[in-house]
Length: 426
Image (cartoon, rainbow, N blue to C red; front, side, top):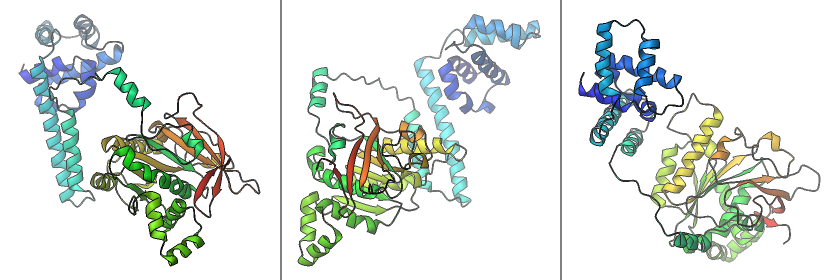
């Protein structure tokens, strides 16, 4: 039996390695007997769910007694030699590393060839992006032989960092008093029914956050608002209103007097601190390219549900696809050290409710929720004379401040004329 066959059977006698690599091994390069034994490995793992490794004695028992009871003496002798070579030892580290890396390289080369064929056949794909994605995925899987990096930081220093945490605070006390300051890597959802004021809510909050960026991140990094719902030109006036606490009439007057731009610059610390870009029809890799280029401190994804994803998942359920999309956004926050805020709609179940439940996100009972650190819900009642009242709740809050409840369930005031959300006590 060739070395490739022996190494394969030795490596895959571990359930973990079997699950990870069995389907990826090019069976055409293996001996017929090896392929047959790998199928028996699968049967053994199914029959012995508690076994993390193939036990030599137990495997021989079922192999001869159940799987292949009619083998001749000559066949038994042949298989005994194979089993003796493969079941009593594992490949050494160097052999294992070389085997897995060769497997990953062959698999990647095949995928690149298939990608090139699709591209040459006129498929609607971004070849460079998909090629880089394949190479990055392969690089992450390669056995590099690097030692595990444990967290060895001094506990006192870690506690000091936590105690002295400098981050981005919310404008609303209903949020500020119940959530710790946000830092790079934090990701959450803001959700509301149509016409509850999500755009004004975001404008109200990020114009308060903008001046905090230099102190928190130690550098002048922008807020980027990826808009794929309405027109971005309609958002910009709302941002100016929220920053200056002005009506449109007040802003027209200030602009005529020549004071509007400078007042806005002072309010948000920089004229280009908040950047809005229309991304209708964009792919996820285009979003990442902008983040990579401009290194924002805060990213608004409005809405993630409408971004086109190049990774596929056409056969998955809607909630599974959405969970993957929100997990992608969360990973970008960690990768680029930024705060991420996605917007979502509340389903019809949450209509006429000040405090909708966590599960009432459109097309997702748990998928989106599982990928985020916090979930802020903007609720409203349809009762007459309550048009300006909104309910603010945080049904999921992993940023909860110590000593307070995670969900404030507070009533606040929506000042639509100035694109501001105000605490009811003000």
